[in-house]
Amino acid sequence: MSLQRSSTDLVVAPAQVWAGLTSEAQAAAIQLLARLASDLLAQRPDPNHPEISPCFRRPDPPRSAPSISTAKP
Image 1 (cartoon, helix red, strand yellow):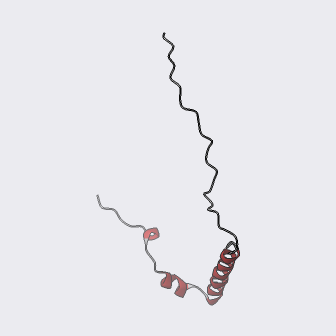
Image 2 (cartoon, rainbow, N blue to C red; image 1 turned 90 degrees about the vertical axis):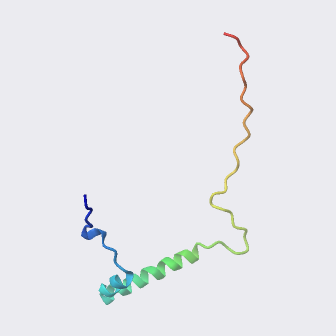
Image 3 (cartoon, rainbow, N blue to C red; image 1 turned 180 degrees about the horizontal axis):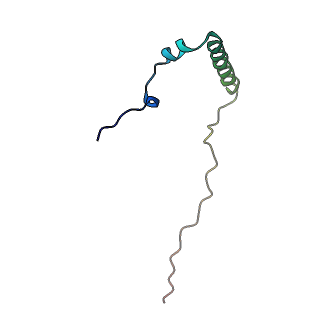
């Protein structure tokens, strides 16, 4: 059996997409990228404060060792 690629499976280079945009759409894309970069920079922590990993969490309290019942049936 042969698999055929549909039109939605086509690989398109970014340059092809950019060239197909109107100048207004290109300007909007540039503004969006600039806003995203600005937001990313605004979220950067203060260099004077130590950075805490977002995965940091307190360890779970230690559990007692499992006990083995010595009761006989």
